[in-house]
Length: 406
Image 1 (cartoon, rainbow, N blue to C red):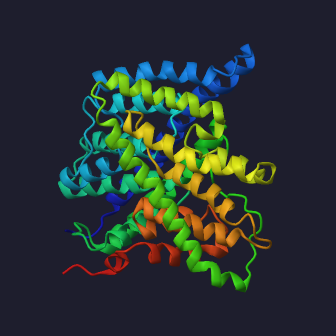
Image 2: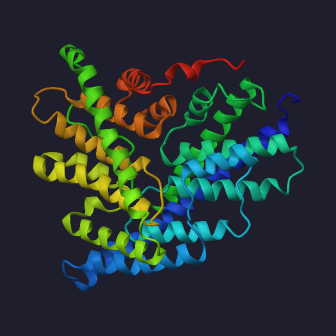
Image 3: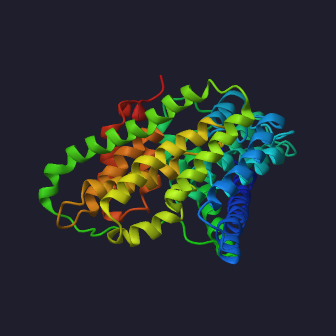
């Protein structure tokens, strides 16, 4: 492949800006529709306790119709990434608009899933549509789609180095572009996407995300080194709980053959869990700042209920057609469980909470460097070396990350 050209670099820069704008527009749309449905209407008309069930069941009808008429949309993150690796593109014909619509409905009506899966499909499809009209080689087109996926992760997780992280995590795979060129382009598209995302998001006045979780104390205490490995083990065990729920509930839901019935079960579950607490609903992206800022106002029993039951609702949503991502809910529930694990301690427990979340999320995401890059600006920067160390300890294939291709 020829050396990186200036025009391709410009394409990458412009694509990054576009990716950030698309992400901000979609999340802005979800925010305003969610705010109208779950805040404005209840306050305006003073609905009773059953309101979450009422709204979620209405959403079930939409989700059921989407499943019957449009298919199992939006596709998961793993499905989209696999499609790019296999075909070099994400198909947009008869799929892009249905993906936008289905994701908007699912997120607006309270599903306990994140937007990352849908946004990868939306951005990947849009990128494919754009580059189909550019005079580029097939290899360049494939690389642009791959870069756009890294850019969307950079935007929504405030992780400008996620593109670099993805390259490290997958460095054992065959590359169609020189490594240095790909790393350089990853930086260009990640920072341009994140910059345009933050600017456009502020223009739309969308509330803050999970950036800068508020921990009780972020200082370091040397005796915590004794608790480092036990905390990693506890975080790993929680991730097993989070993932196995999806396996078992998906297996149970497979006996439900009619998609509308499955969607109704999912909606009823969302409504019932929403009655318990609003923290059960949505991805947890915006709620985590609120909950961590006032965590001392809640009882340990309440926090335990949230930490244990929200993964159940995540699994039910994914198994009944309320499709979405699991990374935001994983960060949310792992952080709450981290508070619970350390509630009996006195002193700077922020470090141990960070290690707990890093261990849990690494197991769930499956990529150590990518996970660390996502958590880089969520937790105090001085803990990043321990986040990275924890991620590689938890990932059983960590050696593969630096294995050179044969």
